[in-house]
Length: 451
Image (cartoon, rainbow, N blue to C red; front, top):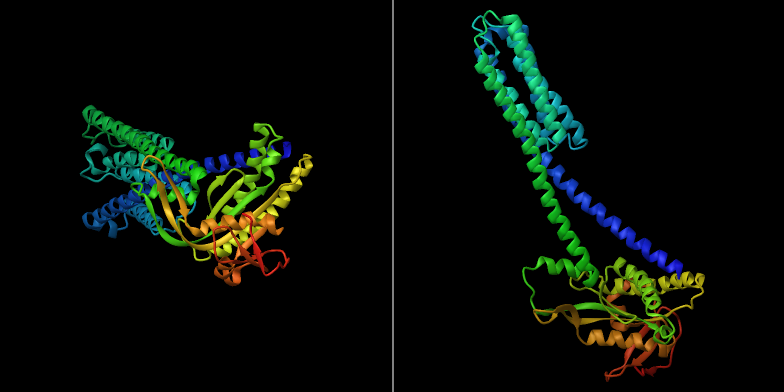
Protein backbone atom coordinates (compact mmCIF):
# COMPACT_ATOMS: atom_id res chain seq x y z
CA UNK A 1 0.00 0.00 0.00
CA UNK A 2 2.80 2.42 0.86
CA UNK A 3 4.42 2.04 -2.54
CA UNK A 4 1.20 2.78 -4.39
CA UNK A 5 0.39 5.79 -2.23
CA UNK A 6 3.90 7.22 -2.59
CA UNK A 7 3.76 6.83 -6.34
CA UNK A 8 0.43 8.64 -6.51
CA UNK A 9 1.56 11.49 -4.28
CA UNK A 10 4.76 11.90 -6.27
CA UNK A 11 2.80 12.31 -9.48
CA UNK A 12 0.46 14.84 -7.89
CA UNK A 13 3.37 16.85 -6.54
CA UNK A 14 4.97 16.72 -9.97
CA UNK A 15 1.74 17.96 -11.53
CA UNK A 16 1.58 20.83 -9.03
CA UNK A 17 5.18 21.75 -9.74
CA UNK A 18 4.57 21.70 -13.47
CA UNK A 19 1.56 23.99 -13.02
CA UNK A 20 3.62 26.38 -10.88
CA UNK A 21 6.34 26.45 -13.53
CA UNK A 22 3.76 27.17 -16.23
CA UNK A 23 2.29 29.95 -14.09
CA UNK A 24 5.69 31.55 -13.59
CA UNK A 25 6.45 31.13 -17.28
CA UNK A 26 3.25 33.01 -18.14
CA UNK A 27 4.24 35.90 -15.84
CA UNK A 28 7.81 36.03 -17.12
CA UNK A 29 6.69 35.84 -20.75
CA UNK A 30 4.19 38.66 -20.33
CA UNK A 31 6.67 40.94 -18.58
CA UNK A 32 9.51 40.14 -20.96
CA UNK A 33 7.35 40.73 -24.04
CA UNK A 34 6.20 44.11 -22.69
CA UNK A 35 9.75 45.10 -21.73
CA UNK A 36 11.02 44.17 -25.19
CA UNK A 37 8.35 46.26 -26.88
CA UNK A 38 9.13 49.21 -24.62
CA UNK A 39 12.87 48.89 -25.21
CA UNK A 40 12.30 48.84 -28.94
CA UNK A 41 10.26 52.01 -28.60
CA UNK A 42 13.04 53.66 -26.59
CA UNK A 43 15.59 52.53 -29.19
CA UNK A 44 13.50 54.11 -31.95
CA UNK A 45 13.23 57.37 -30.01
CA UNK A 46 16.98 57.29 -29.32
CA UNK A 47 17.67 57.00 -33.04
CA UNK A 48 15.40 59.95 -33.86
CA UNK A 49 16.97 62.17 -31.18
CA UNK A 50 20.55 61.15 -32.02
CA UNK A 51 20.05 61.71 -35.76
CA UNK A 52 18.33 65.07 -35.17
CA UNK A 53 21.14 66.10 -32.83
CA UNK A 54 23.78 65.08 -35.38
CA UNK A 55 22.02 66.87 -38.24
CA UNK A 56 21.84 70.03 -36.17
CA UNK A 57 25.58 69.91 -35.60
CA UNK A 58 26.32 69.23 -39.26
CA UNK A 59 24.11 71.97 -40.68
CA UNK A 60 24.24 74.66 -37.98
CA UNK A 61 27.90 74.19 -37.04
CA UNK A 62 29.21 72.84 -40.33
CA UNK A 63 32.27 75.10 -40.26
CA UNK A 64 33.27 73.83 -36.82
CA UNK A 65 32.79 70.25 -37.93
CA UNK A 66 34.90 70.76 -41.05
CA UNK A 67 37.56 72.49 -38.98
CA UNK A 68 37.80 69.40 -36.78
CA UNK A 69 36.65 70.90 -33.51
CA UNK A 70 36.96 68.29 -30.77
CA UNK A 71 33.64 69.16 -29.18
CA UNK A 72 31.62 68.67 -32.36
CA UNK A 73 33.32 65.45 -33.38
CA UNK A 74 33.03 64.08 -29.85
CA UNK A 75 29.29 64.73 -29.90
CA UNK A 76 28.89 63.34 -33.43
CA UNK A 77 30.74 60.16 -32.47
CA UNK A 78 28.48 59.59 -29.48
CA UNK A 79 25.36 60.12 -31.57
CA UNK A 80 26.65 57.76 -34.26
CA UNK A 81 27.41 55.04 -31.70
CA UNK A 82 23.97 55.44 -30.13
CA UNK A 83 22.30 55.18 -33.54
CA UNK A 84 24.25 52.10 -34.65
CA UNK A 85 23.71 50.24 -31.36
CA UNK A 86 19.98 51.02 -31.43
CA UNK A 87 19.65 49.87 -35.04
CA UNK A 88 21.45 46.63 -34.20
CA UNK A 89 18.99 46.01 -31.38
CA UNK A 90 15.97 46.75 -33.58
CA UNK A 91 17.15 44.34 -36.29
CA UNK A 92 16.81 41.46 -33.85
CA UNK A 93 20.48 40.64 -33.48
CA UNK A 94 20.07 41.26 -29.74
CA UNK A 95 17.35 38.65 -29.26
CA UNK A 96 19.35 36.87 -26.55
CA UNK A 97 20.60 38.18 -23.18
CA UNK A 98 17.97 40.89 -23.14
CA UNK A 99 18.75 41.94 -19.55
CA UNK A 100 22.38 42.57 -20.53
CA UNK A 101 21.23 44.82 -23.36
CA UNK A 102 18.92 46.68 -21.00
CA UNK A 103 21.79 47.48 -18.64
CA UNK A 104 23.96 48.47 -21.60
CA UNK A 105 21.25 50.84 -22.85
CA UNK A 106 21.03 52.48 -19.43
CA UNK A 107 24.76 53.24 -19.57
CA UNK A 108 24.44 54.35 -23.20
CA UNK A 109 21.64 56.77 -22.37
CA UNK A 110 23.61 58.24 -19.48
CA UNK A 111 26.60 58.65 -21.79
CA UNK A 112 24.33 60.48 -24.24
CA UNK A 113 23.20 62.79 -21.45
CA UNK A 114 26.82 63.52 -20.64
CA UNK A 115 27.63 63.98 -24.33
CA UNK A 116 24.82 66.52 -24.56
CA UNK A 117 25.44 68.66 -21.49
CA UNK A 118 29.19 68.58 -20.80
CA UNK A 119 30.68 69.65 -24.19
CA UNK A 120 28.87 73.02 -24.23
CA UNK A 121 30.12 73.64 -20.68
CA UNK A 122 33.72 72.58 -21.41
CA UNK A 123 33.92 74.19 -24.89
CA UNK A 124 31.49 77.12 -24.73
CA UNK A 125 30.60 79.11 -27.85
CA UNK A 126 30.98 82.89 -27.97
CA UNK A 127 27.21 83.22 -27.63
CA UNK A 128 27.04 80.77 -24.71
CA UNK A 129 24.97 81.99 -21.76
CA UNK A 130 24.95 78.91 -19.53
CA UNK A 131 23.81 75.29 -19.69
CA UNK A 132 20.22 75.92 -18.68
CA UNK A 133 19.73 78.30 -21.62
CA UNK A 134 20.61 75.59 -24.18
CA UNK A 135 18.26 72.92 -25.67
CA UNK A 136 20.58 70.17 -24.42
CA UNK A 137 19.29 70.34 -20.85
CA UNK A 138 16.02 68.65 -21.76
CA UNK A 139 17.74 65.40 -22.83
CA UNK A 140 18.06 64.35 -19.19
CA UNK A 141 14.28 64.58 -18.75
CA UNK A 142 13.68 62.17 -21.64
CA UNK A 143 16.22 59.67 -20.31
CA UNK A 144 14.73 59.82 -16.82
CA UNK A 145 11.29 58.93 -18.21
CA UNK A 146 12.65 56.18 -20.46
CA UNK A 147 14.15 54.44 -17.42
CA UNK A 148 10.65 53.50 -16.29
CA UNK A 149 9.82 51.79 -19.58
CA UNK A 150 12.25 48.99 -18.74
CA UNK A 151 9.73 47.58 -16.24
CA UNK A 152 12.30 47.41 -13.48
CA UNK A 153 11.90 49.72 -10.51
CA UNK A 154 15.60 49.48 -9.72
CA UNK A 155 16.53 50.51 -13.27
CA UNK A 156 14.05 53.40 -13.17
CA UNK A 157 15.36 54.73 -9.85
CA UNK A 158 19.00 54.31 -10.87
CA UNK A 159 18.46 56.11 -14.19
CA UNK A 160 16.63 59.01 -12.57
CA UNK A 161 19.21 59.45 -9.79
CA UNK A 162 22.10 59.20 -12.25
CA UNK A 163 20.56 61.84 -14.54
CA UNK A 164 20.01 64.16 -11.56
CA UNK A 165 23.62 63.68 -10.41
CA UNK A 166 24.95 64.37 -13.93
CA UNK A 167 22.80 67.49 -14.15
CA UNK A 168 24.03 68.79 -10.75
CA UNK A 169 27.67 68.13 -11.73
CA UNK A 170 27.18 69.88 -15.06
CA UNK A 171 25.57 72.89 -13.38
CA UNK A 172 28.35 73.10 -10.78
CA UNK A 173 30.98 72.85 -13.51
CA UNK A 174 29.15 75.49 -15.53
CA UNK A 175 29.22 77.92 -12.62
CA UNK A 176 32.89 77.31 -11.91
CA UNK A 177 34.06 77.58 -15.54
CA UNK A 178 31.58 79.98 -17.07
CA UNK A 179 30.23 81.92 -14.10
CA UNK A 180 31.01 85.24 -15.77
CA UNK A 181 28.64 84.53 -18.70
CA UNK A 182 26.01 82.30 -17.04
CA UNK A 183 22.57 83.88 -17.51
CA UNK A 184 20.53 81.44 -15.46
CA UNK A 185 19.68 81.72 -11.80
CA UNK A 186 17.65 80.23 -9.00
CA UNK A 187 14.38 80.21 -10.97
CA UNK A 188 15.88 78.12 -13.80
CA UNK A 189 17.47 75.75 -11.29
CA UNK A 190 14.14 75.32 -9.53
CA UNK A 191 12.36 74.74 -12.84
CA UNK A 192 14.77 72.05 -14.02
CA UNK A 193 14.86 70.46 -10.57
CA UNK A 194 11.09 70.14 -10.62
CA UNK A 195 11.16 68.94 -14.22
CA UNK A 196 13.76 66.25 -13.53
CA UNK A 197 12.03 65.26 -10.31
CA UNK A 198 8.73 64.94 -12.13
CA UNK A 199 10.38 62.94 -14.90
CA UNK A 200 11.99 60.66 -12.32
CA UNK A 201 8.66 60.16 -10.57
CA UNK A 202 6.93 59.54 -13.90
CA UNK A 203 9.56 56.96 -14.82
CA UNK A 204 9.07 55.06 -11.57
CA UNK A 205 5.27 55.30 -11.92
CA UNK A 206 5.45 54.01 -15.50
CA UNK A 207 7.52 51.04 -14.34
CA UNK A 208 5.23 50.35 -11.39
CA UNK A 209 1.99 50.76 -13.33
CA UNK A 210 3.13 48.69 -16.29
CA UNK A 211 4.40 45.95 -13.99
CA UNK A 212 1.04 45.96 -12.27
CA UNK A 213 -0.87 45.74 -15.56
CA UNK A 214 1.41 42.98 -16.86
CA UNK A 215 1.06 41.07 -13.60
CA UNK A 216 -2.73 41.38 -13.74
CA UNK A 217 -2.77 40.15 -17.32
CA UNK A 218 -0.54 37.26 -16.33
CA UNK A 219 -2.80 36.52 -13.36
CA UNK A 220 -5.78 36.26 -15.71
CA UNK A 221 -3.79 33.92 -17.95
CA UNK A 222 -2.87 31.83 -14.90
CA UNK A 223 -6.51 31.77 -13.84
CA UNK A 224 -7.53 30.58 -17.30
CA UNK A 225 -4.79 27.94 -17.24
CA UNK A 226 -5.91 26.79 -13.81
CA UNK A 227 -9.53 26.56 -15.00
CA UNK A 228 -8.41 24.57 -18.03
CA UNK A 229 -6.26 22.34 -15.82
CA UNK A 230 -9.04 21.68 -13.33
CA UNK A 231 -11.75 21.24 -15.96
CA UNK A 232 -9.44 18.95 -17.91
CA UNK A 233 -9.11 16.71 -14.85
CA UNK A 234 -12.86 16.07 -15.05
CA UNK A 235 -13.56 15.93 -18.77
CA UNK A 236 -10.14 15.57 -20.43
CA UNK A 237 -7.84 18.35 -21.57
CA UNK A 238 -8.94 18.34 -25.21
CA UNK A 239 -12.62 18.50 -24.23
CA UNK A 240 -11.86 21.28 -21.74
CA UNK A 241 -10.04 23.33 -24.37
CA UNK A 242 -12.91 22.85 -26.79
CA UNK A 243 -15.46 23.91 -24.14
CA UNK A 244 -13.46 27.03 -23.18
CA UNK A 245 -13.07 27.98 -26.83
CA UNK A 246 -16.82 28.13 -27.45
CA UNK A 247 -18.88 31.18 -26.51
CA UNK A 248 -21.83 29.05 -25.42
CA UNK A 249 -22.78 25.44 -24.78
CA UNK A 250 -24.57 23.86 -27.73
CA UNK A 251 -26.49 20.67 -27.09
CA UNK A 252 -26.23 17.94 -29.67
CA UNK A 253 -23.27 16.75 -31.65
CA UNK A 254 -21.80 15.77 -34.98
CA UNK A 255 -21.32 12.40 -36.63
CA UNK A 256 -17.69 11.32 -36.91
CA UNK A 257 -15.61 8.12 -36.90
CA UNK A 258 -13.75 7.32 -33.68
CA UNK A 259 -11.99 4.46 -31.96
CA UNK A 260 -13.53 3.47 -28.64
CA UNK A 261 -11.63 1.60 -25.94
CA UNK A 262 -13.25 0.01 -22.92
CA UNK A 263 -11.24 -1.48 -20.07
CA UNK A 264 -12.52 -3.11 -16.91
CA UNK A 265 -11.03 -4.97 -13.95
CA UNK A 266 -12.15 -8.57 -13.62
CA UNK A 267 -13.35 -9.69 -10.22
CA UNK A 268 -12.58 -6.35 -8.65
CA UNK A 269 -16.08 -5.95 -7.21
CA UNK A 270 -15.73 -9.13 -5.17
CA UNK A 271 -12.20 -8.14 -4.13
CA UNK A 272 -13.41 -4.67 -3.12
CA UNK A 273 -15.89 -6.18 -0.64
CA UNK A 274 -12.94 -7.00 1.62
CA UNK A 275 -11.51 -3.46 1.55
CA UNK A 276 -12.36 -0.41 3.59
CA UNK A 277 -13.69 2.53 1.55
CA UNK A 278 -10.39 4.38 2.07
CA UNK A 279 -8.26 1.44 0.86
CA UNK A 280 -10.61 0.89 -2.06
CA UNK A 281 -10.27 4.50 -3.21
CA UNK A 282 -6.48 4.44 -2.77
CA UNK A 283 -6.00 1.25 -4.78
CA UNK A 284 -8.47 2.25 -7.48
CA UNK A 285 -6.93 5.69 -7.91
CA UNK A 286 -3.44 4.20 -8.11
CA UNK A 287 -4.60 1.84 -10.86
CA UNK A 288 -6.57 4.47 -12.80
CA UNK A 289 -3.77 7.00 -12.65
CA UNK A 290 -1.30 4.66 -14.35
CA UNK A 291 -3.82 3.58 -16.97
CA UNK A 292 -4.85 7.13 -17.82
CA UNK A 293 -1.21 8.08 -18.35
CA UNK A 294 -1.03 5.45 -21.09
CA UNK A 295 -4.28 6.56 -22.71
CA UNK A 296 -3.25 10.21 -22.67
CA UNK A 297 0.20 9.41 -24.06
CA UNK A 298 -1.44 7.94 -27.15
CA UNK A 299 -3.79 10.90 -27.59
CA UNK A 300 -6.90 9.34 -26.11
CA UNK A 301 -9.55 11.15 -24.08
CA UNK A 302 -11.06 9.50 -21.02
CA UNK A 303 -14.80 9.89 -21.58
CA UNK A 304 -15.83 8.49 -18.21
CA UNK A 305 -15.06 6.08 -15.41
CA UNK A 306 -17.58 3.33 -14.90
CA UNK A 307 -16.75 1.96 -11.47
CA UNK A 308 -13.36 0.36 -12.04
CA UNK A 309 -13.82 0.59 -15.80
CA UNK A 310 -12.55 3.20 -18.26
CA UNK A 311 -14.17 4.42 -21.46
CA UNK A 312 -11.65 6.19 -23.69
CA UNK A 313 -12.14 7.82 -27.08
CA UNK A 314 -9.61 8.35 -29.85
CA UNK A 315 -10.74 10.87 -32.45
CA UNK A 316 -13.06 13.14 -30.48
CA UNK A 317 -13.45 16.00 -30.11
CA UNK A 318 -10.84 16.23 -32.89
CA UNK A 319 -10.04 13.54 -35.44
CA UNK A 320 -6.32 12.98 -35.95
CA UNK A 321 -6.38 10.50 -38.82
CA UNK A 322 -4.64 7.65 -37.01
CA UNK A 323 -7.17 7.22 -34.22
CA UNK A 324 -7.57 3.45 -34.62
CA UNK A 325 -3.85 2.70 -34.55
CA UNK A 326 -3.36 4.89 -31.49
CA UNK A 327 -6.20 3.09 -29.72
CA UNK A 328 -4.62 -0.30 -30.46
CA UNK A 329 -1.21 0.87 -29.28
CA UNK A 330 -2.84 2.19 -26.11
CA UNK A 331 -4.53 -1.20 -25.55
CA UNK A 332 -1.19 -2.97 -25.92
CA UNK A 333 0.54 -0.59 -23.53
CA UNK A 334 -2.30 -0.83 -21.00
CA UNK A 335 -1.58 -4.54 -20.69
CA UNK A 336 2.11 -3.79 -20.08
CA UNK A 337 1.24 -1.02 -17.60
CA UNK A 338 -0.97 -3.39 -15.62
CA UNK A 339 1.86 -5.94 -15.46
CA UNK A 340 4.16 -3.27 -14.01
CA UNK A 341 1.41 -2.13 -11.63
CA UNK A 342 0.94 -5.68 -10.38
CA UNK A 343 4.65 -5.98 -9.65
CA UNK A 344 4.38 -2.93 -7.41
CA UNK A 345 1.29 -4.38 -5.76
CA UNK A 346 3.20 -7.57 -5.04
CA UNK A 347 5.75 -5.58 -3.05
CA UNK A 348 2.90 -4.59 -0.72
CA UNK A 349 1.58 -8.19 -0.58
CA UNK A 350 -1.51 -7.31 -2.60
CA UNK A 351 -3.02 -9.73 -5.15
CA UNK A 352 -2.61 -8.99 -8.86
CA UNK A 353 -5.36 -7.30 -10.83
CA UNK A 354 -6.79 -8.68 -14.07
CA UNK A 355 -8.15 -6.52 -16.85
CA UNK A 356 -10.17 -6.90 -20.03
CA UNK A 357 -10.01 -4.47 -22.97
CA UNK A 358 -12.26 -4.05 -25.99
CA UNK A 359 -11.51 -1.80 -28.99
CA UNK A 360 -13.84 -0.96 -31.88
CA UNK A 361 -13.82 1.67 -34.62
CA UNK A 362 -16.85 3.23 -36.26
CA UNK A 363 -19.20 6.20 -36.49
CA UNK A 364 -20.63 7.94 -33.44
CA UNK A 365 -22.35 11.19 -32.57
CA UNK A 366 -19.94 13.25 -30.47
CA UNK A 367 -21.16 16.30 -28.59
CA UNK A 368 -22.93 17.70 -25.55
CA UNK A 369 -25.65 15.51 -24.14
CA UNK A 370 -28.03 16.59 -21.38
CA UNK A 371 -29.48 20.00 -20.52
CA UNK A 372 -28.19 23.54 -20.51
CA UNK A 373 -27.94 23.31 -16.72
CA UNK A 374 -25.97 20.06 -16.75
CA UNK A 375 -24.39 18.94 -20.01
CA UNK A 376 -21.80 16.24 -20.58
CA UNK A 377 -19.53 15.82 -23.55
CA UNK A 378 -19.70 12.20 -24.67
CA UNK A 379 -20.13 9.93 -27.66
CA UNK A 380 -23.19 7.87 -28.49
CA UNK A 381 -23.75 5.12 -31.01
CA UNK A 382 -23.56 1.41 -31.75
CA UNK A 383 -19.77 1.72 -31.94
CA UNK A 384 -19.71 2.43 -28.20
CA UNK A 385 -21.98 -0.49 -27.42
CA UNK A 386 -19.93 -2.95 -29.45
CA UNK A 387 -16.66 -1.83 -27.85
CA UNK A 388 -18.24 -2.44 -24.44
CA UNK A 389 -19.45 -5.88 -25.53
CA UNK A 390 -15.97 -6.79 -26.76
CA UNK A 391 -14.50 -5.87 -23.39
CA UNK A 392 -17.09 -8.02 -21.61
CA UNK A 393 -16.33 -10.93 -23.92
CA UNK A 394 -12.64 -11.06 -23.01
CA UNK A 395 -13.31 -13.09 -19.87
CA UNK A 396 -15.39 -15.62 -21.84
CA UNK A 397 -12.69 -16.03 -24.47
CA UNK A 398 -9.79 -16.11 -22.02
CA UNK A 399 -7.88 -13.17 -23.45
CA UNK A 400 -6.91 -9.70 -22.25
CA UNK A 401 -7.81 -7.75 -25.38
CA UNK A 402 -10.40 -8.10 -28.15
CA UNK A 403 -10.16 -5.92 -31.25
CA UNK A 404 -12.82 -5.73 -33.96
CA UNK A 405 -12.03 -6.20 -37.62
CA UNK A 406 -13.15 -2.59 -38.24
CA UNK A 407 -10.52 -1.30 -35.78
CA UNK A 408 -7.81 -3.52 -37.29
CA UNK A 409 -8.62 -2.38 -40.84
CA UNK A 410 -8.79 1.31 -39.84
CA UNK A 411 -5.40 1.05 -38.12
CA UNK A 412 -3.84 -0.34 -41.29
CA UNK A 413 -0.12 -1.08 -41.33
CA UNK A 414 0.45 0.94 -38.15
CA UNK A 415 -1.48 -1.59 -36.07
CA UNK A 416 0.49 -3.80 -33.68
CA UNK A 417 0.60 -7.51 -34.44
CA UNK A 418 -2.87 -9.08 -34.07
CA UNK A 419 -3.98 -12.71 -34.19
CA UNK A 420 -7.42 -13.86 -35.39
CA UNK A 421 -9.80 -15.11 -32.71
CA UNK A 422 -12.67 -16.15 -34.97
CA UNK A 423 -16.23 -14.85 -35.21
CA UNK A 424 -17.99 -13.57 -32.12
CA UNK A 425 -21.73 -13.17 -31.68
CA UNK A 426 -22.54 -10.54 -29.08
CA UNK A 427 -25.86 -9.87 -27.43
CA UNK A 428 -28.03 -7.38 -29.27
CA UNK A 429 -26.46 -7.95 -32.69
CA UNK A 430 -27.62 -10.34 -35.41
CA UNK A 431 -24.33 -10.50 -37.24
CA UNK A 432 -21.18 -12.07 -35.84
CA UNK A 433 -18.11 -9.89 -35.43
CA UNK A 434 -14.65 -10.98 -36.46
CA UNK A 435 -12.29 -10.32 -33.56
CA UNK A 436 -8.55 -10.29 -32.96
CA UNK A 437 -6.19 -10.27 -30.00
CA UNK A 438 -2.53 -9.68 -29.18
CA UNK A 439 -2.10 -13.34 -28.16
CA UNK A 440 -2.27 -16.25 -30.58
CA UNK A 441 -5.16 -18.44 -29.42
CA UNK A 442 -7.42 -19.43 -32.35
CA UNK A 443 -11.01 -20.22 -31.36
CA UNK A 444 -13.82 -22.14 -33.03
CA UNK A 445 -15.32 -20.55 -36.15
CA UNK A 446 -18.27 -18.99 -34.30
CA UNK A 447 -18.52 -18.12 -30.61
CA UNK A 448 -21.45 -16.65 -28.76
CA UNK A 449 -20.90 -14.09 -26.04
CA UNK A 450 -22.92 -14.33 -22.87
CA UNK A 451 -22.57 -10.61 -22.33
